[in-house]
Length: 626
Image (cartoon, rainbow, N blue to C red):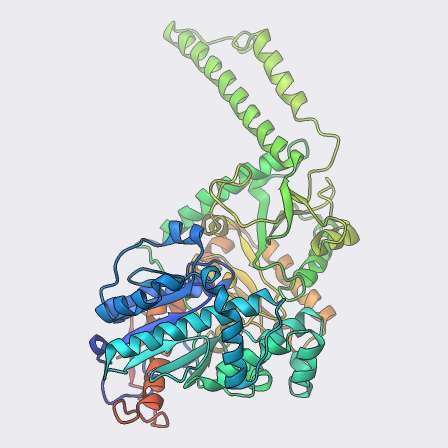
């Protein structure tokens, strides 16, 4: 479904087929959304479910349920236990409650561990149904089978309770032989992720891969068979971007029926300066961390320091960390050669295996705090003496206003900041320090946070948290405080990180191989002017892409403060394009289409009907569809 090339927040209106009924009779329907990431933060799908829940609840109310695996720590922190409002759902849960199910009105969680004794029987059922066998040592595949079987069991009990009312939509991980409409949404293909992680020239050879052979060589053939079976059993197959739709057509042998772009819940500010103030506040918190981390080597001006970052799963090549590090080396060279007084501090926020915080990082924050306390003690004494002198009508003698003890305290504080080692590159003790991809490449390019380097690197191998003793900030606040997000991904079906930057008014770098980059490239005529730099990784070599990324970052470093403020304002204007209030309608379309295919007599729609695009008029400087 093509979208108009516009920056209007209503540019997505009127691009879907018209239905005979404007709204579904949701009071007679039940909507279930099944995913492994329900209340279980694993990757970006968790963000999709979390942010999309609001608009779905607004549409479906108490008839919308999410389903996923039960983990006690997630259950205690993310949901509240209560009784389901629908009696049929309550009875279906009662039928399973003694077999490993934990439930709540809007989230039904299945205890996989307590149902594992059924695994062999369900493996036999899977083989009889579709001739797919699962090895005993693949824990993830076995857990997926248990969850899917429990969900199918639940639906069977539910249908019996509903009697002659089979109108239930199920967004499920696989199609089931139960009278209900199913939609399967894939956020990536399993084999595609593996191939890209293995440095295959993926996109130039999509049509040349022997899918079964490649899956077998990587010992994931059974998983790929499960994925392909789910795709072909569903009434409607959707994916999150056009580039993933092309990938799915080759890897899964089915063309997606609907592309459902991922959105976010956009919070609009009444005044433009409000989100700029949030940027300043968060940036001040990051600067405090930098003061501690670089104590003894803080010979650069924090007012002339830019904060770049990359975040996400630790997939070194898929996320583009390899090309990012090489570009940082070249950026460091350019800044030194051109004698640019700007310093760039780059954060790598990627979870890896660690023991704990390293001593040097903790010591740095302790030294910073001690210096802060010392400065405040001396300042208080200075202020009291100055105050007393002024009350007496005297101009104080600056040589006597600070006594010898004050100078001694300050000298001790200065000596405490002496450091004979370089500031650490990583904030934690890494378990695989010698073989870690990021640290190995940092050693290769020689960026060790020395005084001569204009580019400094900090690898934070844990997700951010406001309770951290090192960098006490949540991810959202951290992003707001940065100047540029850099995500040069090679394999990124959507890419929430640059989208989150855009919504918060922070410029970002993405690629034309990410779903988000393709989406912006299609709907924004000049993305760079709006703070979204799209790196060409599809039609250029790795060397050319690396040079292009270096140039993006170097040009950004040459901007003045005023230019960066203006660019942030323009970036924030794109946030409406990513709002679930508009992108959520693609999921509505997918549900309509699934109902039509499952129950054509009751739900009629013509998917080939011409799109109704109404004439737009200018509104507040933009064109809005009526």
